Amino acid sequence: MSIAPAPEHADQPRFVRPPPPALRHDCALFLDIDGTLAELASVPEAVRVDQELVRSLPRIMRDLGGALALVTGRAITSADRLFPGLTLPMAGQHGCERRDAAGSIHLHAPHRKTQARLRKLLRRLARRHPQLLLEDKGAALALHYRAIPDLAPQLYRAVRRSLREDDGYSLQPGKLLIEVKPHEFDKGTAINDFMAETPFAGRLPVFIGDDLTDEDGFASVERLGGWTVKVGGGRTRAQYRLPDVGAVIRWLLAPIHDAPARGSATSVTTLPRS
Ligand SMILES: [Mg+2]
Image (cartoon, rainbow, N blue to C red; front, side, top):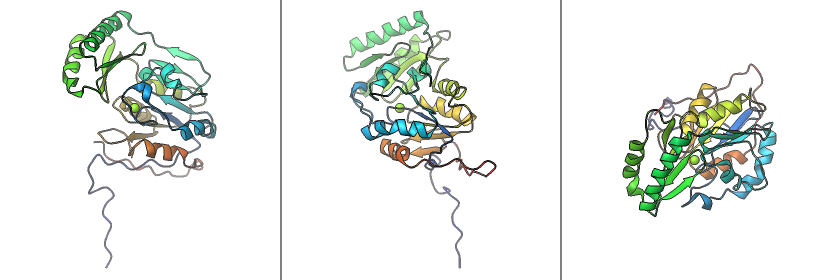
């Protein structure tokens, strides 16, 4: 007697996602940093990236025809310190600044008046609660409350009260941080900009990220027919999931596969959105 196998994932929670397929030579790879390539730390300056990965990134980039970019909430100057000796294409501050593959910097000017008002508010909160860490990135401003997580509802209320419809700024929640940033730019707009340029254009976009801000990037990559990979638990619109930073690094260091021959069918599993 033969027993029919159960439908794939039928007995698993809706948020389960399969791991991504192996990286291919025709991919354009977009990588978040904190929580994706590196474990989170008590302060952003304490974050370290695995040295084998740093040494391997130029080789991975060559194998992808140069189509590799970092897409981070950090300012580019802060992220560069994590990759000594490398000048990688990068979108910083959730897309408010971008260094393209030719090394040119694209800066999106913040709304000065709004920014000044929000900076004042966040500074006041940081003075009142010394365990808070204010990170002034230039266009975006982040308040880290890792040392005092119970304060989160109060911080969200204060920032929401201060934001107005026509501010041009929006609230960006993150892991143990609350951030304000110009709303017309996000990780998705940054990926779109890269995908319109050499050497990214015409490739299969792949984006890996762990936090809420990465969902904008997932939406763009989804529209472009690429692969989206969520790191760790939590709700997501991504197709695939890797459990942690270690799994991301192992996936990146694995052999890169050839692109399928033109006309051959590819099988990509898409599970229901949670
Ligand atoms: Mg992250």
